[in-house]
Length: 376
Image (tube, rainbow, N blue to C red; front, top):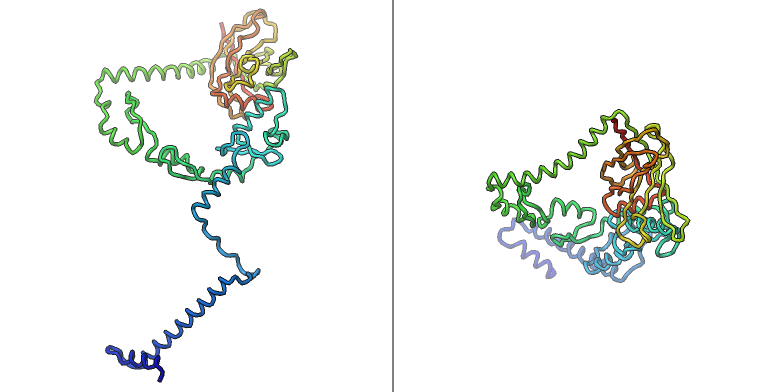
């Protein structure tokens, strides 16, 4: 009997065992286990030696990249996917020229607006090929890739995908800046969200006297009355007997002066049985509006028909049905006659220069004009 068999017999004769057959079965299982381990080691050794891969074999799973290498990959993606104008990652739509160079929506619109002011063809800053809304298209793949790149929260400095960062900063971040719920009665406190319950528990404004609260509510009522006055005026104008509105399209044109300036003018249109024209200008005819960061549009209404008596009217411009520009309604008044057939230039009430660039970048500016004739 070999030494292995002697050990097996010893195991079988150990106290608590029922019979020697059980020991022999354990030996067989052990031998099979050792053989399996040896086979696995041999297989691992063959893999380390690097045999030629089988072309018909299924693809192997990708190995997880270490954090250091992934960080370098993100940096490389930042440089590849950034806008060629501002060199920053796009926050919304991404446009590309015919050669594939990327531009964020803000820079793309700004380039088109500048070309309109300079009376030049807009070109890509990289390859100088022509760009326009017809020649350029959005790159949805880059937009999706950028939305998945990590970025830091401005409050808690943790990293989140760009697609979920806005929701995190508005709803989830415990360090986001928030205001006291008693701000409507004068509490000026601002602080991180996680400190809000402690502040509201100690806030002194709920215990203010009635006189103090009446003063605060009086200021709020004044602001509310100013807002309501505009809407009440509009509702009052809608009750007039003679009301007209039409879609107007401002088209660009330039003067023949030594220094050409950009103007806009609509074709003649008929409202309230009268013929009208709208004109517009950039930055009140500033000499070089393309050098200014702040851009505005102002317009005037001209009566082209001859009238027998003065025509007193109220008018306002609103955004057209297919545009996304934001315009605040402002009502203007003028008494038209054969001698005073045009209004002064008044500012188009757009919110900021970004909205103005959107209008300048468009081929035409489409708005809606309302005219209310005041009955004497």
